[in-house]
Length: 436
Image 1 (tube, rainbow, N blue to C red):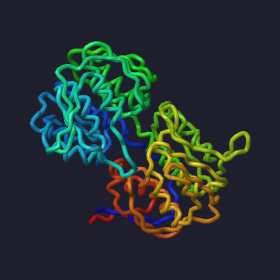
Image 2 (image 1 turned 180 degrees about the horizontal axis):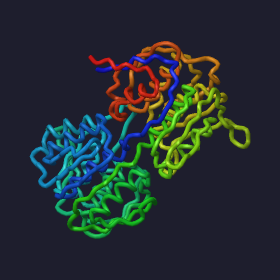
Image 3 (image 1 turned 45 degrees about the vertical axis):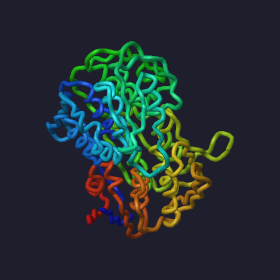
Image 4 (image 1 turned 90 degrees about the vertical axis):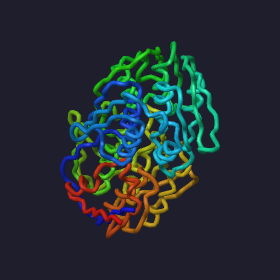
């Protein structure tokens, strides 16, 4: 298990380019199973989750070749069904949350797949009912396999239908869309997720010959086709990393330019940071964050305490609430953070409290942050990262704190952030990676 040793109090200065979007690339890599032709994917981040998924695709028989840094060629000419239905497949996929999006492509292409209990972050239960119910609506049978400790899905032929999803699940929508593009007839998905990552997946599938309408809305219509061909696709910049850098600049009173952010795909993320009082300026497709000694949280028009809550797109992504929370600890004023989706994602605030932050954990989903206005700095301490987003929030806290901090279990951070220590050190941070 590796660790970060962070000396706090260093200001950052310069330019940084966000990596390719983790939440998009996992969908895109799974989608290559839908064709036997070559797919080129560009701007792929070199993160642990991507490496693990590429390894899983190789085991499934996909030919994977690195073309250039961040560019990969993938060709699923033949799928190894012996592995796809094996206990080893169950074991490997259980360790990677993103592997759940293999269900739709494998079912659509081969008519058979297995699913294990989802892996990934320890942030609470992550049910897959939306995925399974959508695939069952298309005609798949869902049966338990006690011997392999998994569930099997199979279908002689998937057929399009109308479905109303019980939640606007991003990965659930992606799975159902990928299964539908090769199904017979028309599929209508209402209450579909419409995040930019889902839009990107749909546009990629269209470029492969799929017929999808309603992209960008919560009502998708897919007319099934018999075959998809190869394509070239470029991953968007990671909006979560963009938000992380904004919070990092504010917490360390740093001047930072974030390059090539695909601003029009950020939704309300910039305004959410502005609500905390953080100045940021759009310059073309870049974001400039000036050095700020102080920033003040807004109140609502009636004077009540500001609330930041996650919501389906175009609402605020839940993946940024941990960053917004830690950023608020050094603002002037108070804010209520309401994390609706996962019941364990806010428990990392105990570490911030031990560092000197004034944070009240109201219940598993809500915290009140009372900002110090940088009058009282956080103190360095030893921590352990429970998940990707809490890990980056802890790193931001440690970079702004007085003294030395240690973050263990940084494999969780590496799952979503590419060479984050090296990139931040180039801007003036002091982060040492210690491997065991």
